[in-house]
Image 1: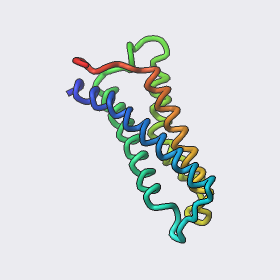
Image 2 (image 1 turned 90 degrees about the vertical axis):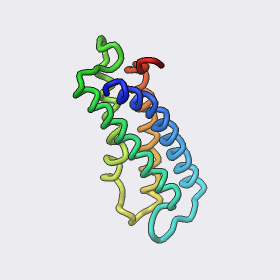
Image 3 (image 1 turned 180 degrees about the vertical axis):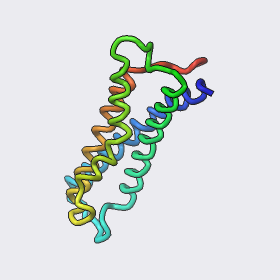
Length: 140
């Protein structure tokens, strides 16, 4: 069971990084091109991408917590391996924390910028977490 979860955790990081980069860059393009936002708030396709990115980040964190509960440690389990957990927490909570800084739809352009920056921070933290704890699954 631990091998299966480790494999999913190892390969899900690619999805997290790709979706966070696409969502962040796309959001900045929408912001700087002054894309007209609807009265209902953020551009709907981008908002769906944001939800997917957030969900993948939370899934990655959940898989990591499951692995820790099974007694596994990041990387070799020596040195600064605990930084993997710090960066992983940033990945899991970047978008939910950014939600506290948004206007709740009163200023959709500001919300777009905040969420775009949050997803780029998520991508940076995800890349750093991958660097501090790469542990290829057994058989890979």
